[in-house]
Image (cartoon, rainbow, N blue to C red; front, side):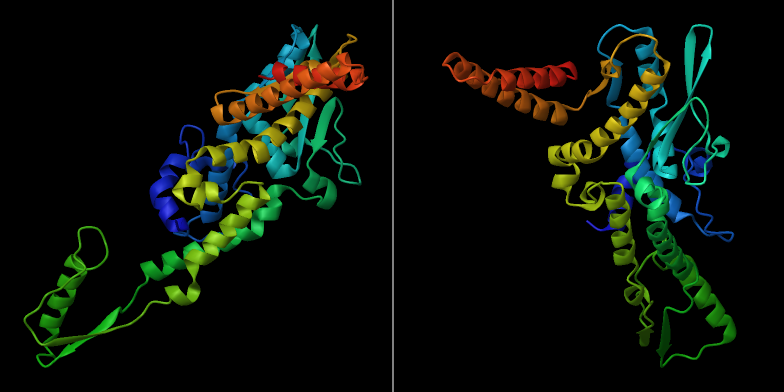
Length: 358
């Protein structure tokens, strides 16, 4: 399926207008590239970026952060991570880090994502705000760049290609030359004929693509430069690179329907993007707990689980069944006189962690 077919069939489904308003993307931090569009030119780069971010943020709503035991501070941090997940994810991809400030009022702590304009950096580009937990992305650590900055050239490519297509369609000019024995005609007849052609025939809505005439007429077509520009292929390849930068298999959006709608695609999205992202956000939560707790409790009481995604839960269940079978084998081996007690305890601990997150 081509990318333009994807837009015709999928775009309205992919963008949840209650969450993302294309006309108000500044509030989500997507409109950051300043492509300097003239009047009448569309921001297609932002549109494609919002499709990818919508997919990630919507899927991330099935991540639930929680505490494995009753603890007011841990519960408060978990609630913060759940409530502000979209804001946290946006900062991570846009800036290359997550920066969360903690403040204490009385006996209670409050947490907030620091707006980028309020963040101060040292000479090495590290955040230096007080009472702040910061977790950096790998791309920021390696290249001092965020994912948004990395995909900017691809979005610019998409933007240019689709606006070029819009320009060509809006300024078609002459599509062909009509001639015949009964021509030339008077200027008035010519104007009337051209007006009728514009009004009734063409590729637009309520127009006919065919004209039948009893006259002996010839038509010489003038080709548009779409094939030479290769717009569809350019946009498709650029969008694939945007998806890959986020770790998403592009086939989720523009592959065959079997993959795009199937269990394999959904599981791949969670395995390759959502769960690793949840582990990064969890790192923020555990760091907040370490900085604010006065109790001798491990920050590992904070964890997360995936809910409402059978494709992921079935995979975890298969893993648990396999490890349980292996544990039974080790116990039999240990009872037979082979000392594998250390491995048994390690496996029991591993299973406990997995089952806690179900």
